[in-house]
Length: 175
Image (cartoon, rainbow, N blue to C red):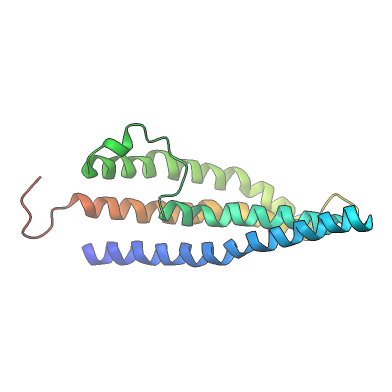
């Protein structure tokens, strides 16, 4: 059971790390595209809506798909006035409670409430409202559904690791 839980958590960590590392390269692309937009606008008095929207799309993808990776690295925003001074056992209990009482319910709410929004976008083949904007907005909106799924998986990995840390190891005195 222990090896299976560790393996489960490791697989989720690797999945979210791969996704996070891949989409993190979009931040470099955002900087480059933003430079092109600024140079085109101020030096050549030219601009393209689709290019500006590309930056917004990349930012959205990075934020939504790398959130689970940030959680796996414990880099999420946390108000840890009490948490940081807690013993490891209590932090593990707080993490388990946070996953099952806050993270998963929020992610399920996000999935349920956004499903109609995303499916309508797919049904109508939604594109940018701006003239000259990007087509395929429904693809970007689909990432709204991917984010909570990845966060739920990462939350389960966090809960599994926390659960494993609560179990006594062989030969260790009981806590």
